[in-house]
Image 1 (tube, rainbow, N blue to C red):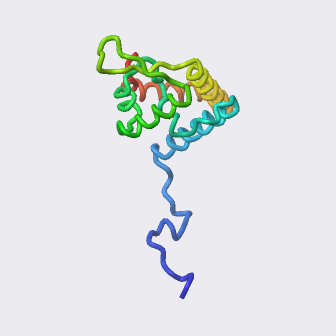
Image 2 (cartoon, rainbow, N blue to C red):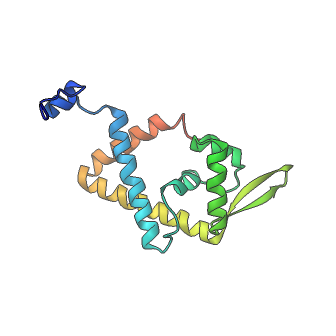
Length: 160
């Protein structure tokens, strides 16, 4: 009989039985909202040639002065995937590759003026998200939330 077929998982049979989301899902939802707002701000400022994959190149702390291999490691992408993104953002005029003064075999990434404007738009978008979340949670709770995230992230962030 159509319609009486049993689904493969008890979770799909009764949505009320879904387990509560774990921290990974909660962080992913927040992360996706930040990325959505970043891209929205970029498009509002005329950078409509950028899309979600390009954000990997610009993620904190940014590509300025980095070797492509350093960005690959930080972004968690394959060399091929990151190289494709670097080629794209270079073709679009956001970065340039310059010879590494310390190693003639290597290159360093340099943000162009257009790339600097993207970095500024991204920071503005994230600051707006922070203001909105602070308003939603209240100043004290948001400050505590941010301190806890900083504490968890500190050993994982790249050194300046």
